[in-house]
Length: 214
Image (cartoon, rainbow, N blue to C red; front, side, top):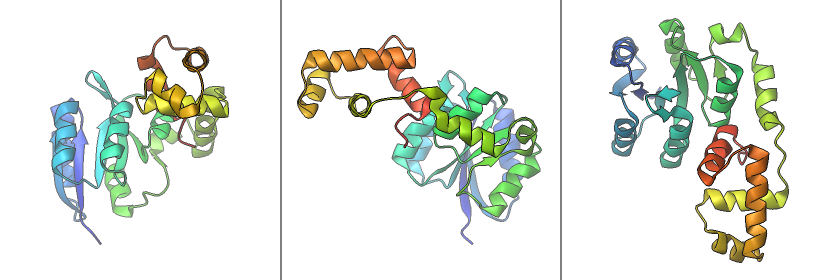
């Protein structure tokens, strides 16, 4: 079986150091690196093809779910595991939508993380045993699929996809053969549905809710 390279992303060095020491004792693991801020983490990914990244959802001033999108663009086959202190339903659902394959609490027994790595069952989402005391996999996925009941029309999705691709209003209008005023109306409708006030909020909420993942 292939040995795994792992990156730990957390802004608390005591956590990354302790976890690294344990993981390096696992025969299946050949390398474990640590990053204590998002800049160092993204740089590490540019320099090495990791198999697994354990990522803090609240990573200093950064949001691990937003970082996840960047990571998966760089390495689509990357396995992301959330490592967090928060187990509320919104955190779990948005983590699923962001592309994570596992959800662990920092209070989980570290041996559970090792067991997950050793089993290498990365095709299905893994929810730690402690978290399962409050949430079941089935209810989690049902809630995630609901996307908080936000329903977009086909045209709204097309406009949103182009906004996410950083197209200007003029370019979106040309691409969809619509007027710029019509595109502005669609953008306003999207902001209203997602309850945001600017494009930055629109992009962030789209990523967190996984609205374009289907």
